[in-house]
Amino acid sequence: MFEALSRIANYFRVLGPKGILSSLSACILKKDTYIEKHIGDAAHPIRLRAMTSDVPTFRQIFIYREYELHDYPAPEIIIDAGANIGLASIFFANKYPGAKIIAIEPEESNFILLRENTANYPNIHPLQAALWNTNEKISLVDPGLGKWGFMTESGEEDALNREHSPGEHGQVEGITVDKILEDFQLEHIDLLKIDIEGAEKEVFADTSNWLDKVDTIIVELHERMKPGCTRSFYQGTPGFTNEWTQGENVYLSRCHSEEST
Image 1 (cartoon, rainbow, N blue to C red):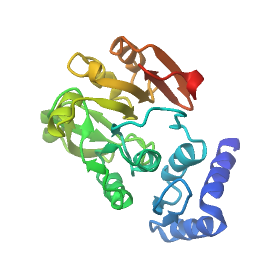
Image 2 (image 1 turned 30 degrees about the vertical axis):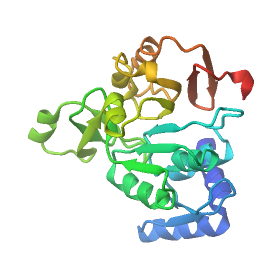
Image 3 (image 1 turned 30 degrees about the horizontal axis):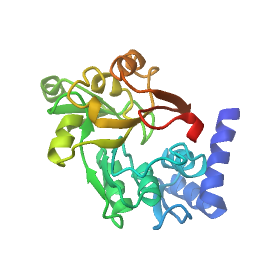
Image 4 (image 1 turned 180 degrees about the vertical axis):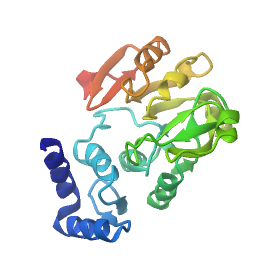
């Protein structure tokens, strides 16, 4: 009961009375409702799907400011892996307008809204793919956690040879960090933000080709969804001198510390 009331309160704070009424009407009519948010931290309106995980994601990023870094040297290159509908990329684009931001999102409906939300930001480059440890097609699965909870798993042949279950979303291109560096002709990554619903276990299993090119990592670990994520992450990230937590995220940095924030 308390969790349900808390969720309603979160929606109310972000959507407002009109947004809530529109959302309830949409639920009754079984239609999608989109809400445009105008906020001082963003130069352009942001489109959200009402009564979905877009709302708490918006709140985490723009109200709780979970990606805020005070006195951080202005980054030139940012990779937003698990970009969802583009909220973190928009936050970074407004805070660091000189940065090149690569926004990676595998799921189709999220990616469509990502492109809409970032269309007015020429420094954001959307890429429909899933960060992974190989450059091949992988399976996209919906475990029923909402628009922010799509997971990826290997096994192209198995996925193609069996009937899709209601929770399956077919195939998506997997891409490695070093392939992103190559494709976008990048020599380094100042800020690597990762929220990929457990795929961090695979991504950090072997970081030898790219880790020394990354200055700061922000990652949400999903140990509860895929056991072994935490161990894989820490074993795959030696050499970072500073670590702290902020919201649901772990921060590792070579040049920045919690005391600076």
